[in-house]
Amino acid sequence: MSRPFTVTRVEARELKRRSERMRRAGGIPHEVARREWLADMERELRSMVRNYDGSARRGRELLEALIIAEEEGVRAVSEIRHELAEKIRKRKAA
Image (cartoon, rainbow, N blue to C red; front, side, top):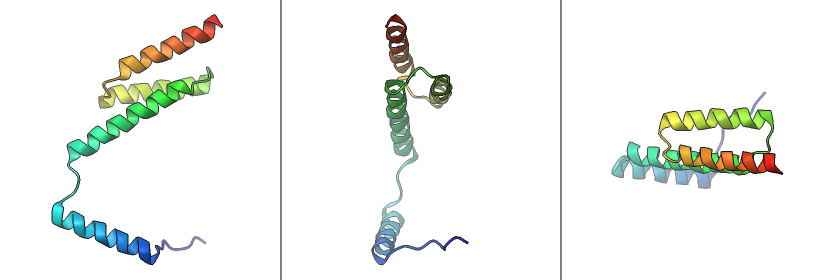
C-alpha cells in the first residue's frame, strides 16, 4: 500500500507563495514556455549525439528524438544531424 502524498511545512509555504504570485501576476506566457521547451529539447538532442555509442538501440532512440524535434520545430535539427553524421564517419574511419 502506498503512502499518501505529503509535503513539509516549508514546501507547503513555498507552494502557497507561488500560487498566490501566479494568481496576482499570471503565469508564464505559452510562447516563453514553448521556447524554453524547444531549447531543452535541442540540448538533450546534442547530448544524445555526444553520447551515441553506435548501438542499434541508441540509434533508434536518437532517430525517434530527431524526428520528434523536427516535427515540433527545433531549428537546429539539421545541424545536429550533421554532427551525428560526422561522428558516424569518424567512427567508421577508425
